[in-house]
Image (cartoon, rainbow, N blue to C red):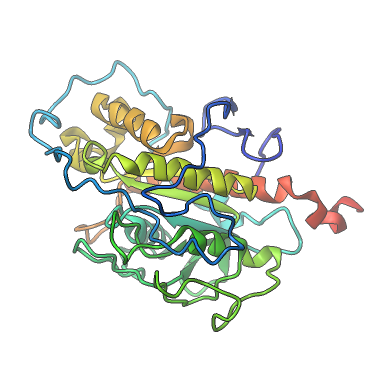
Length: 360
């Protein structure tokens, strides 16, 4: 996969398909003040930072209610697509080949590990199942999805994406963890999230805020290799909840991104449930980039996450459908291709771990 030029760290990265490379300005990055006294800025060597990642108390703040006036049945369409996408069977086939043939530009790692992070019910597990469905040729739900306000996923689960049923896995692994919560002890801790990214957390580890990951944890990886680490983080947010997410969530996302960036890991974002905010897109997914309301919500998601919209891609997961749809597949595969571009930057940003290839 050709990825053009880049700079070390998180300052410069390729934009979404069809867009020029953007330069990020981090001059106004948020400071590391703690959230509600949680000790967010305490070094990870300390035993202190074991509080849930969301500790803000919004109980006395008025709750926003989504009304029909916020998401009206129909908004005027844009005059043209604000991102160019080919909605054809050939494009679907081309994207599948691109994803299937992807291999990290590093001999020490055979797969790129991507961690999905987002609030409860944001659509992380559904995205994994939807991507698997595209390659299986039918709708499947291997990454089990819950429907309650509690996180269905409780442990670290890694899902290989197979190019075809029964064939060897592709160079992509999607990693799922429990959904982030606000102000409850059932949420993940910052310490645990960073431990996952660093490669210390064993597969299947069940997270508990009163039992943070430590060197004594069963299966703890003391000296993780590059293949154990996370190579890209994809934040997942629900388009229907952008207007009602707690105020403190934006600060939390920005602080998370700051810590993750310090590890040299690039980040992107997925905007899910777009069909639930735009009736035209619900009927025809090819309308996604002509939808004025989706573009508006994309801008709000960018503000929430503290990143440019060029890092964010809208997706429609398979939910009630029993059969695949070519256009939905194109949107999902475009998101995967977008993710892989940033995942590969991790290997390019760490040339010291690729000496064997450099010497050839």
